[in-house]
Image 1 (tube, rainbow, N blue to C red):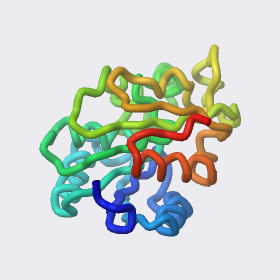
Image 2 (image 1 turned 180 degrees about the horizontal axis):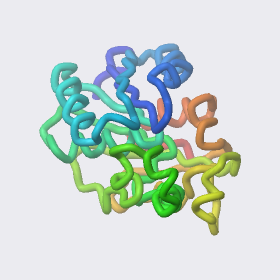
Image 3 (image 1 turned 135 degrees about the vertical axis):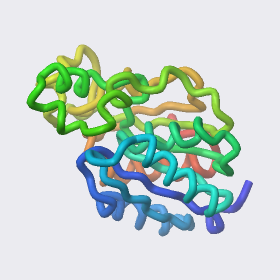
Length: 209
């Protein structure tokens, strides 16, 4: 396995976020020896297939790398790897990504005035990916601080981060999964989330102590 100081990491933001939202996490990963690069896209106006294709082109050009993605970004990253299974990506860390489908997105879609807010990713957000059987090892960091507006649309029954339920971040085929004290947006600024992401990128597993 390539040493951390030589490991390139591509960062993807989530819905309604700019690429700059990944800057703090980028700084944390760089301090631990990784070489982060932020991939930006228009989360509402761009179609997921188009984003996944552009991302795949970048990942192919970058050579061996890993991915850290927040929320919708995790779905798009795995879609890109599913579409092009030969991409040289070893590990993917998803932060609060509704890989099994988002109840909040489904609730918004039922409320027609809000449907446009999800853009072209509405279907992907609502239904998720089903399971993961790709070559890359995928780990998920989920939050359980319920600060956010997702509960207005989803009616969460269990732990959630205010936008995504912990159960919605679980998917058959994951290499590891960990739950931390953070809200959905707080995952981007959590020292614990950054440390867990770095641990998985290095070792293929999270710290469960």
